[in-house]
Every structure is written in C-alpha cells, then in structure tokens.
Image 1 (cartoon, one colour):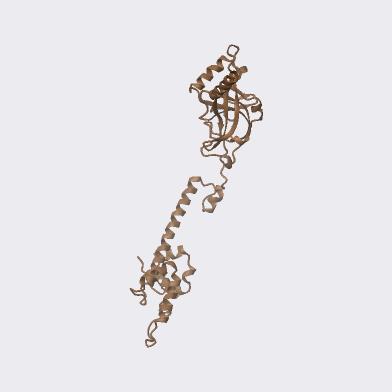
Image 2: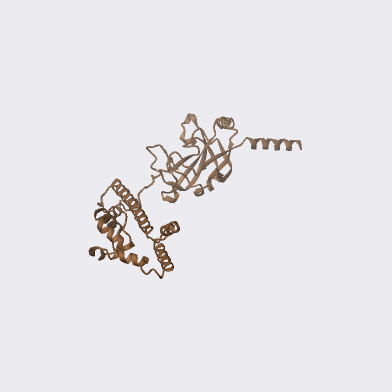
Length: 338
C-alpha cells in the first residue's frame, strides 16, 4: 500500500514538473504571415509528437555532435489563448538523454520559455478575407505539423518554422519567397475614374486625387451657396407686411423647415384676416403677381427652375439685375445682394 502511494506521489510530482508550451497561434509572425490553426493537420504529429531542440534533427548535425529528439509532446490541445486560436502541449523530456536534461533544467528554471511549431505548408491565400492588418505575405490556410521544438528565440513571441520537401525553409529576407508576397492589386479601374473626372486616361493617382479634392471643395462651396440662397429667400419673405413681431419667429422657423408651406400658410392667413371693408388690402397672391409684372421680357421667358444652381450663381455674380428680376418673379420680393 505504501509503495502504491509513493508511486502515486512520484507520478504527481512528475506531472507538476511538466511545462505547457504554446506551440503556435494565429498571430502574425515577424516574417509577415500567419497560420490558420483550424487548417493544421495534427493526425501524424499526435502519432509521433517528436520534440527537437531548435528544429534540428540528428541527420542535420555532424558526426561529433549528434543530437537526437530530446523528448515528446503530451496532452496536445487546440484552445483559445488571449482571443486567438492556438495549439498547446506539455513538454516531456527524455530523462535518459544528458543533453535533453540540460534543456529541461533551463526550461524549469525559466531560462527558456519558447517553443516553435514545425509545419509543412500546403495551401496559401492572399484573399482579403484572410488578411490581417500589417500582413505582408500570404496566409497559410492548410498545413501539416511535423514536429515542435524548444527554442531559445523564435520568429516572434509565437514562433513557427516551415518545411519544404528538401527540409526546413530559410525564412531570411533573401530566401523567403516560399511564402508568396501578398498581391496588392487594386480592384479599381483608375482609367475609368480619370475619364469620369474629365482627365486623361493616363493621369497619375496624384492627379486623380487632386481633382477629387477640387470637386469636393466645389461641392462644399455649392452647399454653402444653397444655404445662403435659402436664407436670402427667408429674409425676403420676412419683409412681407403681413409678418409682424408676433408671428415673425413662427414663420421664420416654418420657412426654414419648408419654405413652400410657409408661403402657403401666409396666404391662408391673409385670406382669413382680410378686412372686407378694405378692398385695397393686398393679398399675397396679388403681391407676387404685381412683383412679377415688373420682370424684364428676357427674364420672363425663362423661369427660376429652368436654371441650374451653377447658372444661378453665375448670374448672381455677373448679371445681378437679371438675377434680381428672376428672383422677384419667383418669390415676389427683391433679393438683398451683398
């Protein structure tokens, strides 16, 4: 009985000494890509969960420094770590390997804290839906995990090592084309935009953007002009003799919301308050008709609505007399020009 308890305690202590490592997650590594954890095939790795030191196999070392696998991985899990899907596992070191015990000591002492997954990429993608901000190379969508290693320093905080048919891939700046760069082709036809803007189809992006800025400024100026014209219409309506201090604020607010409704309301008010004994009292309709009778013949041929906003603005600036006549014909009052 005592022997069983002793063995149980030893098993617990061995379990406690195991360190769980993050082998890989879905963050972008320093080489500019990330690996879709859902697309990693773990079947063979779970059958042979080999652990290397720095991804080095025995065959890759010279005869004097043969380093075999230093252990294996246990309790392999796919889980969420800080909001990212990740693969974790417990490190089990070979207690009969002197070199493995040295690495184990470094791990348990907190001197080595990193692990790195060794993957065989199968498919890549640079489709926008698979890209993350700051990414420069295609996403590894499908891959197979071959091994996982204890490392002193990885590609970033969550390291990864890729393999090809000939062995591991050198991901240095000069030899990283195995992971294709992202194709950043624009889906926009710049020639079409240039022609729509009235520019030459071979215009540069800077020229196109400059023209867009000009149009935006012109649009803002037009909006300001429209606001000013509306204010002018309202101010002229407020000069009608039927509007006084008692109803001025009401009509002003109504005109801001709906000028046509304000004009109609004023007409109804005049009709209601008309003094039958005062035949000469002026109705709003008579007021407008009388004003229209003073129009110049040229102006009467073309109405306010027949002009575009641009034409009205140009007439206001270059032909103020014609503009006043046209405005008076439309609204029954003479505008106040700056």
